[in-house]
Length: 389
Image: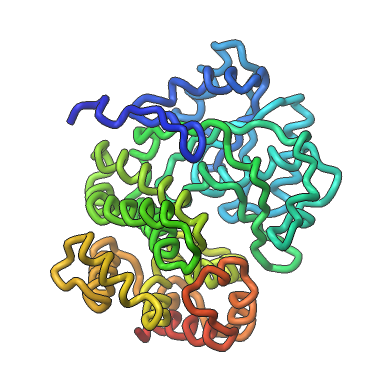
């Protein structure tokens, strides 16, 4: 494989610098955005690793006064964002480098939003026209550097933040939360363990698949979702089997970005359920989507059968119909060692009524091909808990 095969500069949906070794562009990207003192926000598990320390050193060598903040949870909370804002202001920073998995990217974007606001973060919950309350002039620029291939938060205009007091995940949105520059360097994902590679990869699949199945009219997003799913089919098993397969890592990083770009069209029941389950049980978001996937597909069958038949043909599945697609999903999950039920990861049915009600109200539910009510979401959740497909 030629190492330069995956090197490119894209300008959709934002400025993206893709390729092996492109992390070396980080100091120049910060300078291009006028940063002199960026705050690097990362996952606690990454903070002391060579990739982050090297990035800090390179920024400092380029004359940037670069600080670091890593006190965030796997499901970042409002308190984590407040702490990040204090670190930003205390260090007199002027921009954010969001470096890591989905939690770091979401936290970094939320901090960049909140440093210029005088309202609480929950005022910007993605409901109605709340985003108009944002003082956009107070926001600071973000360079996003993903180290996983799942959330696609690097090209998202929102952050998912847990409201710990109310045990709910809220989507904080503003169009300017889209990072100004993204660096996609597959070398940064090489150290990701196989189980996390699988879970994050299926998170990317959930984004592309729900976007493809959503009812909203957005043919461009539908086309991006279609190709993103094909890339995941071809390269996710390879990335899980051999974490040093740079071609697979590069293609999965691109597919993750494509999934997030596509879900401008909408998401659906997988995310509507994963958000409250994640908030109540503090579970890994990508793994939840991976487990929920076949149960939600089955519930939506009447509305998506024709779409999945078309998708199955594009993927060259042996049985190009709904059943063939569902069987591919189940086989892929088994191949990647994804649990079949929520019960296998310690989630019980004690809060089924609460989860059904929260799922019905989740913003992602609006994109589901069928408008499901709280009882229907509760029924899907119960099936997923017990593994009854």
